[in-house]
Length: 477
Image 1 (tube, one colour):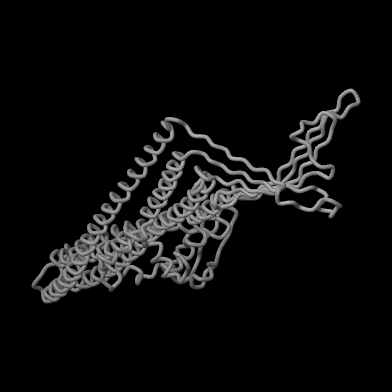
Image 2: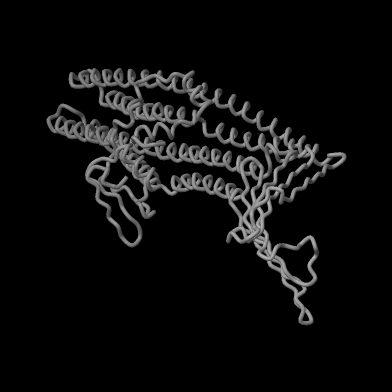
């Protein structure tokens, strides 16, 4: 996303850093778009996909055709002892067989009869097939399957990193909004105390209030100012912390300007209830940690299959068709004869297989350990989701109770103000009611922020926060 997605933004860049300045609001969506596009941790997470692709590409290289050539010549005492040329192309296949073709040409006075070739050279094409060990799986195929499993693991790690980055950004954004609301409450309290101080001083001059009430009202103003200064510092600190998540497209840090304010609507929790069973089911299918463990298990299963294959004897069949090199130029007497061939069989097998059986046992034990890791992680995720859901339900009740308390404290303050105006109460009691209302309002802000954070925590622990963000931004996960 370009910074223009924020309402009327202006990027101010100097030699030290860049500053994000806007005359309106920084919404959650705008924040998430900036984080998604420019945050270094998000870019690092995206590298995991490239690393997985590179691993698969490297493993596929074992199946690349390979050109081979060798030339040896010996001359001594004005005699050409021998000249040996052997060149060709080998093509590995997914089925374990290896195709090959080439050209061989030899000459010299002291050639071994086995190395003799026609004057035009010898064409050859054939296949090497493992009939025992390596028929169903070999190291090349195992390495490729492991790389594909690593690719899945890298993708799962990317999602896990995105979960963490988004959660940190969203919770810091919540703290910023809550600090802004606390600042607004503190400012309103100062204004109310100032108005009362002016009124009390007027009543004192008119002889309706004693001088001690003016001192009481002044102390109220000073107390509210202390609270206001503390709220201002908290808001500035929350702004700085949130700025840590903001970067431009050339990785320069951005700072939120003092004129930027949050959208308090982003503090509200979603209305739709969370179905725990559905959430657990999604977590079992999509949780990045489980996906990582599944990829590791797949690698171990491939390793176990490979170790099982090593228990078989090596039995390799080689069959090669031969033809005179003059066949290329259609020379006389160079027609291809199917009877011209070369073939052979190779066999080998350890007698005790102690190494192979030991390696297989280790592979089986590692696979069993990985399966146990998955089951343990599944249970931990179920427990965590259940615990987070209980905390969320409790916080919802606290928010409702806190809202009722704010309303009740407001009624008490209104009644105390009416009694004070009628001369039936004291400024001290009014102040006590105001302090109680102020504390309940601040606590309610914290509870509302805690409730919204509880939803983020639940999605994060279920491993789907990255998907929620992608859906909110209308992007492909």
